[in-house]
Image 1 (cartoon, rainbow over the protein chains, first blue to last red):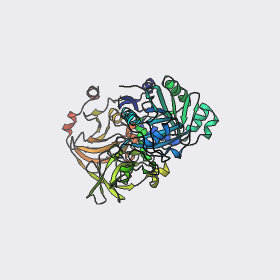
Image 2 (image 1 turned 180 degrees about the horizontal axis):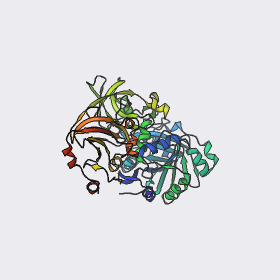
Image 3 (image 1 turned 90 degrees about the horizontal axis):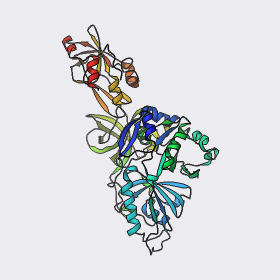
Image 4 (image 1 turned 30 degrees about the horizontal axis):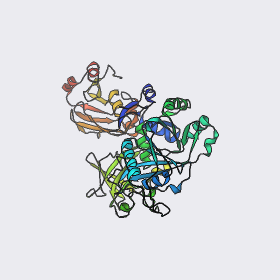
Length: 367
Length: 125
């Protein structure tokens, strides 16, 4: 059982702890709904030290990462971050992660806690055995990848400050220069890496610091009356925005197209692992956002049926109650072409509506 | 854990307040704490006939859905509509404003099966 540097603070705050992929993490403090609304209306703080960080350095760092991931690093400049899936040769999603571009020769990847070992092994194997045959310029790559891969997860603490008032807190913490930090950009100040990123869909920041100073950072930020938020609310927040959770909504049996994140795939890149496989697959089912039209909470595994409740057309992969919408919401794989559906919850068929992306549903606009 | 001495309890974490031939029913502080934030309350229908030990209500929280079992047999006479509008009352005031429904007792003998506060305290230790 692993503990983050913040563990004692969670206990002191009477958090209900839960085992999450080998880590003892806070599920909730005051309550999931209160914590969720604190993020949507004010500002909350999350301990996410369990997540993984890898540094990729060297002459070939940029081209190597371009080959590893589906999204295109050419979309960003140094000082910016990019969300992307990472696929295997069958276009199955190995993980979804964020790439931090420091320079062409220095890149950091932030990965899911559940996939740290798997991702590291995959990346190291690819660096050793599989240099991209075609560089983005179209030239043939003659050598192996000259990259150095470092797993800095156990040396790195990560805290997230999220909510519309998070920028006020950050202003007090590091000064007004934070105002010019745009979404998906990052800066380094006083040995803290601060990025305007997050998993909640509200404005917010993620702060990376040496693990020895993790607790100090939490204590410093807590001086600004931040609401501690646990994994329970982390889930309701991300689900309201349709953000996938690896393991639930995506795994190696799904391609990014199926998982509804094709916007993070750039087929314009000359080559990346899984490109050909993805081009040759035509999925019949895709991950969709689902809103319940009747009182009920969809849960993982609930069957999705057509509006008559006859034909089974899908399954819920993540489900919860949306405190902002006050209704049940879910992500699930559904046959393409359906809008009105029913969801089987504890033997009852409840009406629901399917959307291709949360931007089309009320959730995205109202939260 | 709050366990008022003047109420009766069940092993399945319901509390009962008997006044004459009427019983008011809710869930205990222990139960609401385990459920976490309750968001939907599916109360029984008015005039429904409840059978001792059978599921009569479903409380749905962010975390899970839980069956609530009728502690006694009888006819449902009153529903707490406030709880249907604001299910968080069950969390915030489980013995007061968070009561669920009332029923008219069918068999007062069943009262002897209920637990005292001390007996319930033993169960949740």
